[in-house]
Image (cartoon, rainbow, N blue to C red; front, side, top):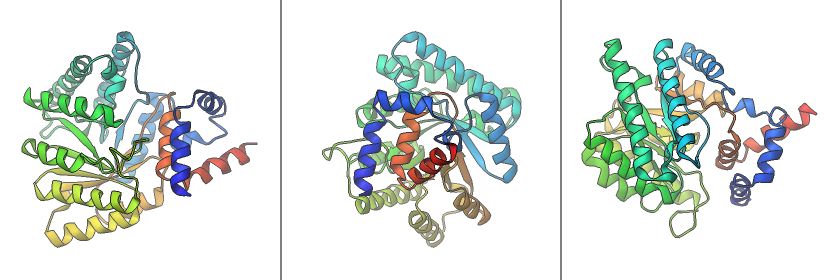
Length: 318
């Protein structure tokens, strides 16, 4: 049943009619529980509250797959504003973004050029403030999207690192067959990795669908990256995986400054508080913006139990 629910939710994430309905009734659906608002001002306020509690954060302008060079330029400008604002506010918050939002669908060079400009700005802001090491806001992570974007995303990452851009991170998805090999190929660069399970509809030819196998591959990726000396963001709300990572790092003598746990805004806040209270770094992904529907559906698909929260919001809002 969970697999069927996940498939249905992922299918709905690409359904225009369902999207129109959701945008029309967003408040009643309780969307604000899962995103930090429509505007950067709202996001900054949410991040500040998280920082005051001891959390780190990242933020993302929701959206993906722009259709024109003008749209890609507008997104780049929006992220320029975000970087400046995070720097001005002094928040413990970095940026995460989708390359398709920066124009990857228009060509690899388009997304590469916009990404390089943003990383250059982040570096300049760091030097301007004289921060050593740079604050979190000067780090940008490139999210991983559907499997057909993986080669281009990894190519852009390698090109950026070859040009000396070290303030950039990458993501690997445990459900993809290729991810362990991708990790091995990237290890000479000592990347800052985020490891996720994977949140898109992928065919069995490229992705595992069995939860036990995905969990196993997830742990293999985390352990291999940490063993190789990389910094790892362990992005999961799965209690069992979190406990296994804690136990393994303790046994292996891997210090807590080598990794962090990442969780999503509005999802299992009690677990976030618990892990933070144990002395681990916890980063809360805090997206904002009006183009929230695909994001929301993938989050529900990752954890179908959250459908009940949305349903209660709908009933209560009536």
